[in-house]
Image: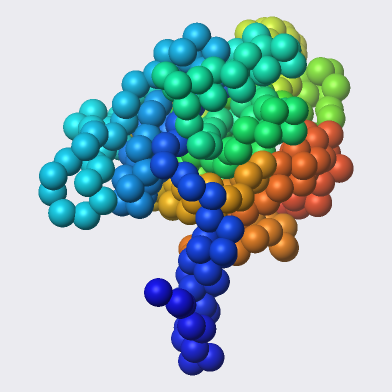
Amino acid sequence: MPIRRRRDQPVSDQSAARSERRALRCRVTISRIGILTSGGDAPGMNAAIRAATLVAAQRGIEVVGFERGWEGVLDSRLRELTRRTTSPGSGIAPTHEVDTCASLGGSILGSARSKRFYEASERAKAKEALSSSTQRVDGLIVIGGNGSLTGAHALHTEQGVPFIGIPASIDNDIGCTGTCIGVDTALNTIVEACDRITDTARAHRRAFVVEVMGRQSGYLCMAASIAAGADAALFREDGRSEDEIVAIVADTVRRGFSDDRGKQRVLVLKAEGIEIPCTRLVRRVQEALDLTHPDLEIRATVLGHLVRGGAPSFLDRMVASRFALGAVMALAEGASDEMVAWQSPLSGGTPTVDRSVTRWSLTKVLDETRALLDGGSGVIKQRVALMHAAAGVLAL
Ligand code: F6P
């Protein structure tokens, strides 16, 4: 049935019609796709698995899940995520396990950081495996962070394996996208933890340095410090030396507990990207305080993997599901070597049926990711400038 475009159609209908026309024009026969979750797990990965499976099943496409990321592809560890059904429609439906997994943290498929997949020879084996009769798939949905997307890009470039990437990393350190699966839940977990620490800090009129994950990205620390009402935020992108950081924290504590401020607690958030162990930082600050204010106490708390677990938030489930719709439709359209992005801070990208979701080439994503981490990206400069503007407010 030809799809005609009517001028008076609202934009979303027009782009839906355009992508359907594209799908019809360049539809590769996609009858079976593979999904994998790779790298650090992130709350919301299961919501993406479920949504991708439902979108595919609705189109009559079978879905298999590779267990523990690229390791599952290399070791032929996979399982069916869809089943045949007699109910009306495509005749394919998600398995019960998939249908009920969206509220779970972690990944039902498991995840791993595959060192083997760094080797081109192993990627060639992966291509072979993905073409074998037992685990043949027409394309992959790769849910993961920078390392996983870089691996998928190499597999596509070297072996021509079609894939669409879905950004999943609590670190929010992936280029072209405003957020990644897991970021919102991790932020909520950090803020809740800071509220708990605030209770005991107030009771003892103490200061705390709370360290949060994020690898080289200070995003979690920056965003959570504002929401948790922290007195200061320490993140790698600021490029401060250890001595400067010790002085900043000691000064923040002294001023916070000074008579004119009269605070009952002082809270400092530290990104793990700052490579001073939290315990050493706190010990050095305590030594500095003992010289001037021996009655003041400071403690350290490292949240660690706590922020990676837990039931995914509304936002992570919603974003993950809408990523999945965009990704499966892109694969069905014959697109590859692209990543879906949420409310991209950059202009450009290929529109999808969803105004908040655009598609970006992996080359662009990886370039922008490098710029995010080396500080060259306008996005990171904006974030740091915002934090500097907020610093005075935070410390009030
Ligand atoms: O990338 C997600 C992340 O949680 C980082 O924030 C952290 O540095 C790293 O993974 C921890 O890795 P692992 O789970 O292998 O210890």
